[in-house]
Image 1 (cartoon, rainbow, N blue to C red):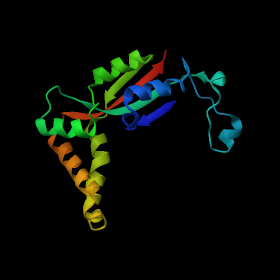
Image 2: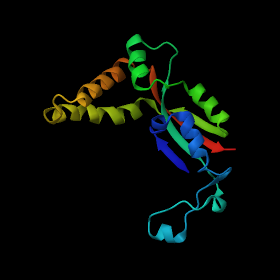
Image 3: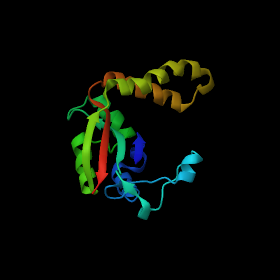
Image 4: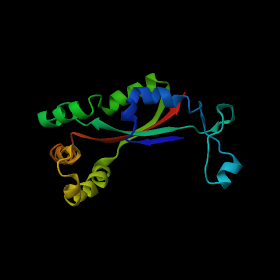
Length: 162
């Protein structure tokens, strides 16, 4: 199993799907050796030793509307230009050789779990980050999150290699 929350965009979703495909056997997932399990440091077995049940799970920021506000669209055009709809990601997964077991909106709670603690920490970090671009960037991202509620969000995708 590969579990990737919010990191497929770093590679690009289509590249991640292609690259990770080699790590998930058709109908099979990694098998861990007893020695590795005893050491609590599991390592994937070679592809020939993979067992049943291989799955790829990843989350991605997606559009929830075809007509986002101009400010929201401009922000994401700069920060994540390849952001797409869930339907586009499903089509990409199928073209990359996966069966889509399911996908779902992670909901507002998932976004709040990430951004609320971050927003609370920004004031405390301001003296140490004074003049740093990251402080301004994070505040802008949080403002877009609040202004753009319902226009974008995290989607979880569960795939199996075919």
